[in-house]
Length: 575
Image (cartoon, rainbow, N blue to C red; front, side, top):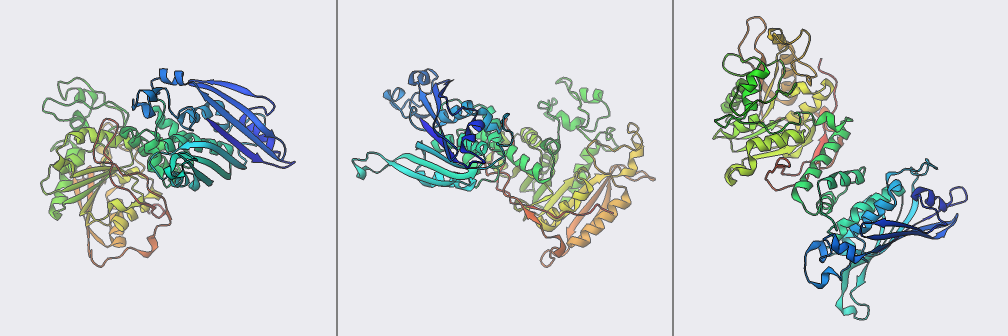
């Protein structure tokens, strides 16, 4: 198994600088032990004009067999002889990828203590691999699709089954030569990820930590690669749960980058806690306790044992049980009533969180489809578990989908619905980002009606446990009084061709109003109303989540459909 890396240079930037980048002296032949054999590094040439570093990997078939992966390809005992006679010692596969990472670890990280300026420099590189296995047919075509988008010129020539009998056709192996001007670290990362992808198998068990390796090696290029879905699926050996996890994490990273924020800041909707226990009647304790005043009330909710109420997990100050039941339940009742007046059958739950409203909507016979959207993959995972999506009958499962997405971006998946709900969502946005949400929901998705709820800041004085001047939740960026909310709703309705009605939710105090305020927007003229010309999207980003079959397991929520994100316009803070 062999790979060579060559570059050219000048007197000012000699090609022999490649030795500094690889941390391997050109005048020495070095040996490195690997789990399945020995890697040799040597330099066929090393001068100012040209330099080539070669890595020869000698595989020990006995060691490979002892590891349990020598039984033919992918560990399948196709033939008894295949345990001992196979292409593993010769074809560039995951064995070579692991050897590259082991031998050139510092170079792959972009580290060079002696010449720190070198790793950031793009070099004219030529990488040659005499035998690369390509699974799935169309070998040269697949190699081109994988490497060309990364800036490589690809020369992939099929290896004939037997040169003496050309009529037998080509084998699944290609002689591969890549040329391009790239950073050496990027080139090594490309090989590390794409060699196992081309081969279609790995010599070791693919554990969850392979997701971390993939995302680390693919940083800066995997998210925008046109064959991203294929790369993720093959690199993770087609393990569905790991593929979905990698896709979700990659989508979250792209959303965070687009908003210039850390991923942890976005995926903070819920704390990382175990599944909530249920009461004797099957009710999730989180539903019972989300508005409880104290931890003691939560612990008393059922016989299944105490559960700690994590600070900030619910709407903090909304702890007391108002007349008519918990405030969260009253909000859901008011939302369902508003939707019932419009007869909405296909409903969007935007910012669905842990799925409480989604569950309530599924109990409504008139509702034929619910799409829950949230930026937090953890929240979607909990929602899938609470809704028991993996155990729903097929007819019921077709009624609900959970997808990851940011509400400040237009998304083609959100178009065509009868109604959308933003339940306690807008106050979690920074005010300068609110116009982006307005356009994404009212301008681009444009459902027939939109129901929005948000806290009434005036009512905060009635919460005995809320210090003066504090908001109800640590993540609330603002809380409006009734006049501010009314002004915002009138402006949005005028801008996007909706009518709006306001109503209180919860007990109405004669001085400060109700704890929650609700706005119900209805499209005034759905056939003729057009979007405001001044709110056209200004940029675009590609799909953040790949299609998946509708299902759920412990690894996360069901994710279906392919989103098409456009960045909604920025705007100034609401006056």
